[in-house]
Image (cartoon, rainbow, N blue to C red; front, side, top):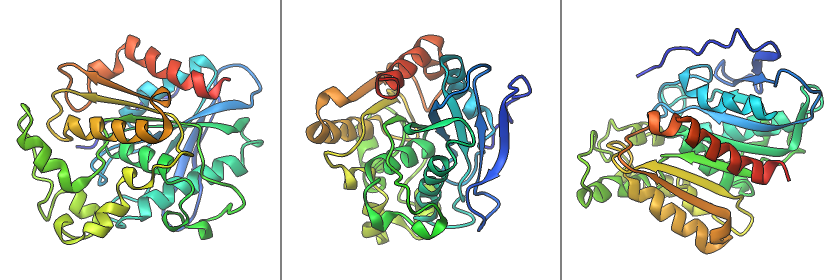
Length: 288
């Protein structure tokens, strides 16, 4: 369900509702800067979740990412077209257009175009992962959406419990101790609504939406975190994704944390200790 908006009145340096493209009102982003400093600041780009059909760049999902301001990160939070407005690949087109916009406008907003990390949960984790692995795939990018001279390459990805292969989700739950809260192959599942038809009838589209499809040696470092009792996205999806990433980019560049007892998000992810771990990971690749 939609979440309450986050109160950012205490953040003085910010720009809200900047359009990174103009086809849809959804194609906007917010920029938050640390209290002090001239930058250019490395960027944490926040991609919200919400089953691809709800959520907002300024809802409470942004709270963990804003902790990066204290470490001298700029935080850019983006909206994208939801499945009720446009089906896949519109969402990843939007994410990549936003990345290119940030790079093209970096000087104006005190941002470091060469130091960007994506961070999202659930559907936002999926889109962060997909943008990270497919940065060099021209078929999954619409350069007509502006700033085509810039790449959508990023330097790191934080994936919180994002789905990968939509077609295996129900099967993986069969072998899990966790009782699933939804049937993913149903015609009205979030994944089917995203793809535009029942996912079992569109295996090629599902493959195109799977971040695993695009893993190459150019894929940036990943931190994957997933609760062991997630009733929406099977934990095993993140385990499999980790193994596939490690096999190609090296185990030293991908980290998997299974948060014992955690569900689909929650206090385990947002604890001070865990946020510190996430920011330490981002530091490793954006501050060196």
